[in-house]
Length: 200
Image (cartoon, rainbow, N blue to C red; front, side, top):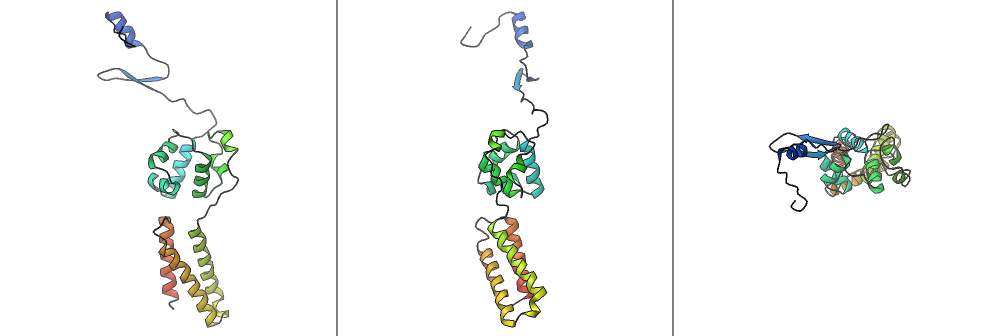
């Protein structure tokens, strides 16, 4: 015996060593027998939070890298979340819920997420970014201008158009500094539409 390695000198001991199969292991044939542990299955009735995160990410049309940038974590960390190698903390679940336009408890409901962690999740989270909110306000103002603009004086109309254009210009200037690519495209499209319809 050398250290922890047992060297079998006769064929019966060698045969016994080769036929040993640890419980829950998968054997691979090859030049050398080796095994890999198998992961225990999920308890009945519980789904995979990682699978739900992956499905929601794909539904939004994002890559793992894009989701990682939105969360402020690495792409590998996102991969580990999606394959259930890691369980996300409460902060990450809250951020994910906001990105996927849901509430934290809805995101983890019916999954294997630990009940003790779920109890500490916030009830609600922000679902919209500041850019999305300001863009929605500009769209509302433009909608209102088209429907009720005839009742306004020329000065009031021009003031409203200038205010909308100023907001869109501000959003376009900060577009390269952390705004979601979808938001950037929406801001640029809205700005082009405003300039085409209401050039001042």
